Each structure stands twice: as structure tokens, then as C-alpha cells.
Image (cartoon, rainbow, N blue to C red):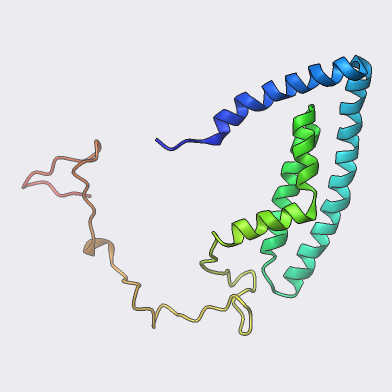
Length: 175
């Protein structure tokens, strides 16, 4: 069974938040702690708006130049995560949220993702497959030997290990 970090994080992050509230509240007091949480949420919302509007204009410029704004899309997801983290009350989530705004960390995350993602195709409706585009396809269905077209009558799939597999008798046909 593959280990998932999500259930682990759903357990650990609230415990860390409680510990941080207790430690900070013991040092600066209850009202100052609550005020600090509200101030970080306000600062985060202004940062999100400022960087989000800048990001939207960069994405529009890339699309107008008929380039795929992959890096900016990843940054958009990071800004969305940062906004969620900053609007969630707590010091641990605020710290993670503010770190997601740092361009250097965004670049590190982009390099990590870029090495693991491959663009498989581009939509002609979006205009990315025009001649000269970096996403222009060099293969067409006519000259691609790896594509085999079959009619529905030419192919059937049978998995004997499937619990939904039908018993096939000699006088019945499979649909």
C-alpha cells in the first residue's frame, strides 16, 4: 500500500497549530495572539490580490503570444494554495502560505515539476498547434506508426480476473 502524506498532514498540522497557539499565547497573551492571526490573514489577502493580478496579466500576455504559460500556471496553483493557507487560522499554515509567495521557492517547485511533466499534445482550438509554435506537432495520424485504429468489432477486452466478468457460453454473444 502506498503511503500518502495527506492523512498524516491532516493529523499533524492541527496538532502543530495548537502547540504554536499555546506557545505564542503564553508569550504575548491571548488578544495579541488572536490579533496576530487576523493581521497575517489581512496581509495574506493583500499579497494574494497583488501577486494574483500580476500573474493573470502575465498569463494573458503568454496566451496572446501563443505560448503555453505552464510556469505561470504552476505559480497560480501555488498562489491559490498560499491563499488557502493564509486564510486558515494558525501560525504553521501562515508560515507555509507566506513561503509559497517567495519567488525563489516557486522556481524550485517549478524545476521539480518541470522534470516530471511532459506535454502530450496541444489543442488546435487554443491556437497552440500553429506552424512555428513551440507546441507544433511533428506527427500526424497518417505518418505515426505507433497508432493502430480498430473498429469496435475488431477488438474485445476480456479480463478473467475481474469480478464483473461475464460467463460466456457458446450460444451467447458478448457485448
